[in-house]
Image (cartoon, rainbow, N blue to C red):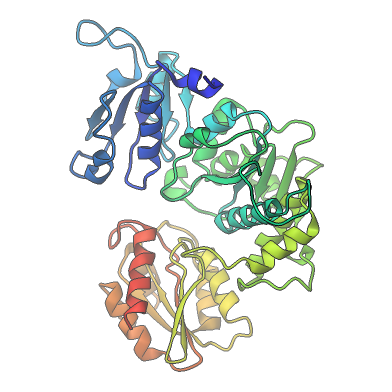
Length: 468
């Protein structure tokens, strides 16, 4: 029996959060398969969680407490209604505040708080190389770039120089903030010699702060205002969570920081980065390396990936080949297609003004103003000054979709029509664009209200474009 199997077998675990994106389901199934007694608790109701529950109904050792949390699941359960045994630990989902009433109750009862990503790193087999990536923007693209670099490196077997993979070749896995992919089930696949590239948001990094541990190879791409509703407009608290990716690093560990991170650390953390930090700038990427993904921000992402790959001793040839062949990530300046000479881009993951500014600059670097922009969504109360300037500089036409953020934009452009559905906005964009133009769906706001989530938003846009 492996160490991780021993750790989970027979444990009593309260899993706080199930959700609908697949990660909570995967973790719950894994814990049950390991022989743990799991109580899954979620604010959503049984009806709301029906798709997730259907995937777990075969497990008799999972109990569901839905439609709200119960204090009894975060303390010793009294007899006779309970077994008198407290949970061995709480598995907290990302996004649950650390100052939650229920987390406070668990602490009062001296019950450890764990999160899936940090728990995986804590129990990972020796000999596994783990790279963690965070940042307000660019973390997904940089994560995927590093993943492709490692995969390309492993295609050439060091022992004989031949291309191709064998059953004995080390493998590379994605983990962390990956859609539909739970982290804990990776224990069943990962072996010594393998690589794991983890995308980590600020909430997931709370688990590393709780455990007082960091990643041996840490990448911090960018830092901008975001999630201020969660952090109550406290940029220092937001940076503090992000900083957990490197705060507890040991001698010999590597930190790669994007160009703006040193100043962000001084301003919002009150301390400089470690002297050993590797600062990655877009200009550091060799000028003759030609990327398929557009924009200076993507050259900055590639520079971070290059520095991380060098830190784990990957040859330059493999790095260049992987980066020059990298085709991008779904929903991030994703070229959906070309209709009547007009290119359509899906940039649904642009949930902040800075992301849309980068997209506009990437698609209209010379300021020809040939971009028809579809924008709008739920407000995060972020500053929109730079966004307004970028829209003025690059957009031929601006089409607004309904949302509280849209209301703020429209306050200065009351003549603009607001579309209550995405199909209406796409139809208007088609009518406004002529050959040589670009239609860019880059909302700049969150997806709450009109869509289930940002992925649903992007998928709807892609379907609409493909139907044109």
